[in-house]
Image (tube, rainbow, N blue to C red; front, side):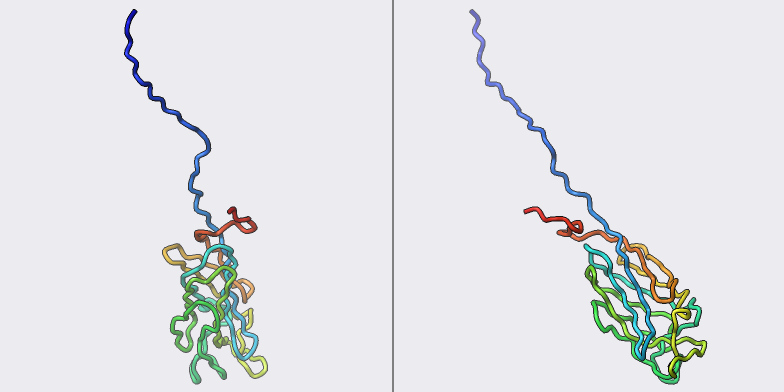
Length: 191
């Protein structure tokens, strides 16, 4: 009989199953709506965030230079535009407006973490240089505004451009990464 030393056998058990991988970052194409309205003694620009999961920061630039009615921003008496100049002011929303001189043909609105479904409202006076009046006021009609452009330059990403085709509204499709903790619309959180 031979003696065989006993050697403990070490075994390795490998359990296989689904691995938990990090989910791929989700992005969303956000409709950023830029609307220009000249309907009463005070004119309005609204910037609306149509997304659901990411805040927006960056610069909205509106260029009235190519407008059909030679639209200008009227901030002072005796300058460009006529009758009822107005200061350019942010009325609501997380934004600031870069200084706008009288007779400017453009404006820059700096968005600072505009939340999903949020809105920025800027008041100002825009006039046309065609001499079109309504009720003793110079008006910039949608036909005057048509051809103007809007651009959104998000921080560290490429600009997105649009045209005010109907003279009031430009919709800019902005792709943004969704923030942590955001879920798909309609999703139920798992505890």
